Length: 489
Image 1 (cartoon, rainbow, N blue to C red):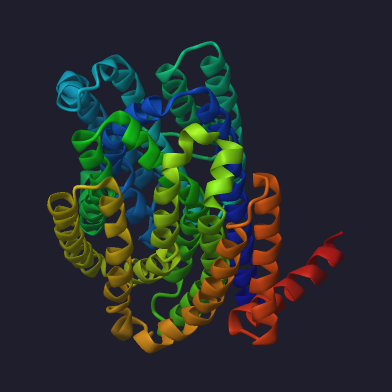
Image 2: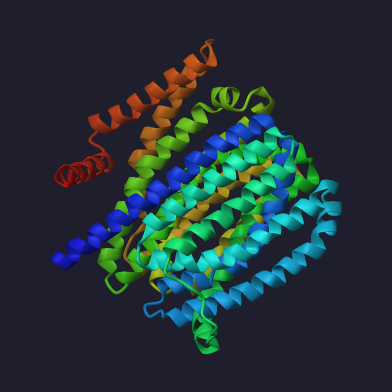
């Protein structure tokens, strides 16, 4: 019984630290990005977005597959960590060489002549990324997310302040490159001091083969997913201009900051937690339900509220030069609202050792997404239509991701819909009220203040009046946490 309590306490502690890490990093980054966006032009962000697409794709080979295999595998040794480290470093070197020589071609294809040298420098992030993937795997296995919190907060502060200073000095695009590069390097250095991992001069190819047998499907899945997620940006960058791409990505980043904080937490904590209970379906199902109920209860109103206050928020934070990003922000609020539901279902599939199913789902979803994108490009010829495809494919993907868990953990469609529907309906009512207030002819500060207060009041009022299950579960969780804080104080 004590062991069970300790296990629950460990998972709860991991969730808290992971939430703090994500919100601390995302919150700090959010503030820094606002400062930088007020100094720099949308065109700078358009060029940066294009560079990051390619470095992100390269990072999939380094940080997906082996990383997840190290977390999921029950028996991992120090030799395994070192073996994976050397393999990923070799992969990083190869990918850097490819991107270095491809830089002029990419710049010419997208008509961005200033991209070549900054891109070659930015691609250096692949090398510390290889080490960082091992450090994170080791931390995740032991649910020691407190260490990630301190390393990432330190990294974002150092990198962010440097980026802002360089931007004020007129560095332009180089300010954004320096910020992104320093962010990875500093996080890696801090973890080097706090995580007990030093690479040994050993590479066990037999173990690499075992880990790769599990991880290659996730690597391919990650590559497909990353390429698909960036496909809209690639199309907009080529079909339109760097300014339009800058508006698109800025609108996407606002809700993405929030969703990444929640989604990354769910993925990082739930995979090792699910994996430890993979032989007990009911436990995995219970953990899934709690995770989906609570994350939906938090995420749905946050996304609905952000969509409702988008216009006055952009005017206040970014100035009117960024107003064209508002429609993209609203579209992605609806797209990202379902991401925690996606994550819980997919992490359960991974934890049950069915990476083959995971890969099949990715192929099906991405084929559907590419079809929708193709129709949008050729039939509508609008960047807004391109962004809208995310809402349609996201809703359909919820059913695709949930399908296998009907058999794997006995979590059926009707149960998942029943778990998220109350929060969704309450959020829709709240959104209607917030949008209505947005039509008032007042100062932006007054409008957004009224919208936020009214939105919170409407959502919590509906939750309390109807005794919504997520609200009651949330209150029970708060009551359980409060006495612990009193005892520890």
